[in-house]
Length: 259
Ligand SMILES: [Cu+2]
Picture 1 (cartoon, protein in one colour):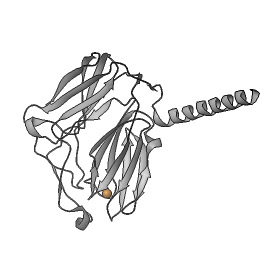
Picture 2: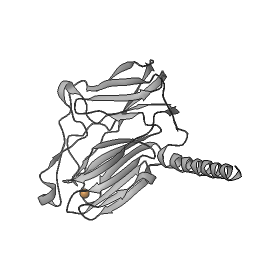
Picture 3: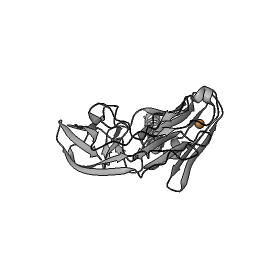
Picture 4: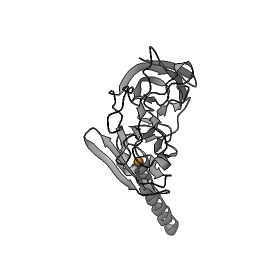
């Protein structure tokens, strides 16, 4: 009996230790994963209103055999019915909710970052990869702070940046070798974040019923011409907010307009 108690106690304490470690690795500070009863869904669309600017052409200065022809800036990509691709929708202030799942990869592929905008919760597993047989130097900057600066000398190189994305924020990603390359990482304090698809649509599920503020983020529109170095010149990112109510087991829809 004594032996059994001892065994139970040991296993409980090691489980507690495991959950502390898992918690620090997979969640933003303050966010708690747990079952969500009567979860609701938020779905919607981001549309462009007004006259869209002409897409900027970005010249390719190096490695034309791999990188190819000049690229179109991906800073404003419109689909059917002017749906805006790669806008980010976040639900703010969810302190407890669904489990954060999945791994994400930011790939350097034919000298373009794929995806162009990657959204994740802080602490999610994120890797930067190169699929190209040329050198890339992937740099992430948030405000004045360099978040990562990675040499990827060849195809198949991969660096885990999970620890660098430990806090919420927006990271602008560039390549020091190829000035036309650009991407964004948007890091949130909960898993309630999504990017819009090529039709401008998004969907976030598993939301605890309640009243929330929903934030839209878009990187901003391209200027007509890139700089002389081929690096795109950017407008400031755009943001907008809306109040939404998520009802028990129901779907709430929301529409954002960018202009
Ligand atoms: Cu590069």
